[in-house]
Length: 308
Ligand code: ASP
Image (spheres, rainbow, N blue to C red):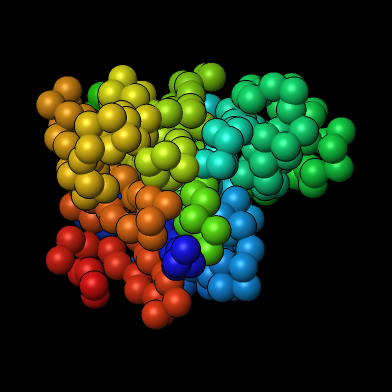
């Protein structure tokens, strides 16, 4: 039996408009942040660690980085608060953990993992989820900890623009990996979309919409206009196109994105298969993304940016 090569793919969000940011260094910082996340996950995979450990580590690194719309630096709700969503899934047995409306847990992806492993439920929402985290000894912080001035400015802009506002900002984070055992896993973490209303849940924490992993097909993480990814059951649709429809990873990505576009949505997908195959696609002007394997790592933002 040949040993599967490990591989890690991450995204730092698709965006629906050109990158404009108060901080001129933002793009360079985001590229550096993607590199750090790839390193965090790669170290685990290169040492024979599991895909689950690698995707949690990569997503966790991006949650801590204020450049991204996850953890600190997340976009704000209509009320000027941060409410976080996250999910993680293990392709070995399709175990999963997901949380939404997190207000005080510093590491939503680690909370999702804790839930995956210590259930008994798959999905916890709101205060109950933060309480579960506190009870499990997972660090709690005031909601203000997550809030940065740049996101306040974006909220004001969005509220002033009203219906015209384009809510998808770059920065939702995701990671998918295949380890040397050929097991896949996926993780996604986000603050959602700017000016979201109370209780809004996006695709990211919904198993099968923004996050999915199945050793029989692929591990997938999505970013983009969440409402459309939910309606298309995007990540699960991608896996089933491969498993039941015999499509390749890239064909399945392209077809799911076309399906989402046909109902009016835009965004991107990253995916890896147990064979070691990896691919991505997006229908927005850009998607922060990166890939790593034993041969090295690459980071890209715009289309046509791909080094390999
Ligand atoms: N998909 C995320 C959501 O709808 C947003 C994003 O990817 O930027 O919550």
